[in-house]
Amino acid sequence: MTHAKPNPDKASRLRAHQISLKQCSRCDAMIGPVVTGQPVASPVLLVGQAPGAKEGMAGKPFAWTAGKTLFNWFGRLGINEEQFRQQVYMSAVCRCFPGKNPKGGDRVPNAQEIEACSQWLHRELELLRPQLILPVGKLAITQFIDVDKLTQVIGRVHSIQLQNGICDVIPLPHPSGASTWHRTEPGKSLLQKALELIGRHRAWNSLSKAAEQMHG
Image 1: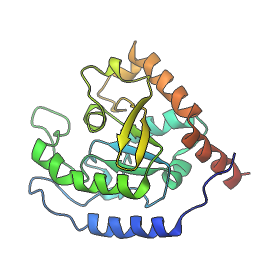
Image 2: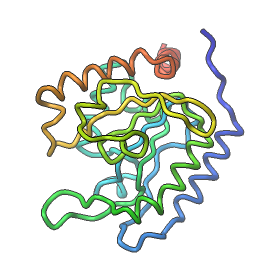
Image 3: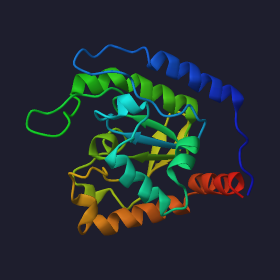
């Protein structure tokens, strides 16, 4: 199998995109700074919900406890955190910390905030033309497919039509420590099935082989 060579023009456009993104301040209730992953021209796009309180200081998404769980999942597929960050474009529904919910946990972004931030995700879809999207958590999943219950969508491959063609979506549950969904049945088995589907996907396999070459 042949693999696409890095596209320097695409990478430069992603860097320019992130420069503009990091200057965004359109949502008054959101707490900066804007958090982004690396501007890597990848066939795989991961979409989270929004950064937590620690991610802004760390300067990268999934930098705290939920991230440890998430990267442990991908470690089962042979790619560690460093390799993942270098080879997968990490995006989110909203890019600033929404603040705390008075009832506990992080506040869920409201519809206006999601809409205001959606142009950044749409632009990334245009630039990347991903072959595989990994939405993490219900809010991210609903940006691509209809969701009633997670049990109905996780553990399956969903094909969607993007502007530039068909793309596969393999949803994942949120790796929050406050959630028991991914640690109890049927969520535990559905998570494992989703990971197996990711591991067999051609886009993921291209990353795995690149990681082997980097460390071989």
